[in-house]
Image (cartoon, rainbow, N blue to C red; front, side, top):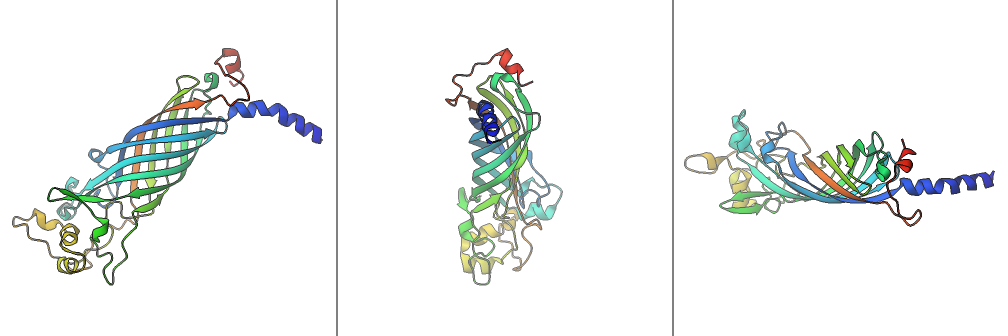
Length: 289
């Protein structure tokens, strides 16, 4: 029995070497977000789509399953000025932008099976899901400058009786769909759409309640007070809007989302030293139909 197992293992070794290969590529596309400054987490505004780019390595274990390690840079933004159906949200007048740095590890399932070698299975849609870590840094434009919001404590963070400053790092759960197509044994093109629910409500610096202008100015300074409540900027006299501490500022959703869609291009490292150079051939490709 032991000899039979050894013989089977040796006979399957070339097939295993063929099935597994490493792949490296890039992604170019766009990013968007849903959170407190996208009409209280109820809309995704296409005009807020910003650039996204990334690089990845993918280990293909067989025709059906792969694991991808990816690094993405993206920019997201939102503003209450986009809202036309809710005067309260529009007059809140908050806005932000943030760059994101994401490191992710996801598993992929090629629904039809994907095998670029010999163009045996050159096309497949796929599903993916995994885990990611994301670094973010929301900023707002004020008097011609982009001001970092987290150090200011616009909701009283760091003041006595209030929460500590939030972290500018969060975990996320990337998941989505894509399609891939092998132009040759070596070159793949694809299209991928992914969503990322995060474990933070501060991608946009907005989550909880207002702190009154005078209290916030006394505790965290004039800039924090000015950017904590910007409704007054819409008034003719520009005077700060005065609301009591505890007035709702953010929406009821507890987590922010961001999205990345992009075109991918990648290269297959098919030679592994076990089977020598691999050239496309109709007879060999036919073995995988």
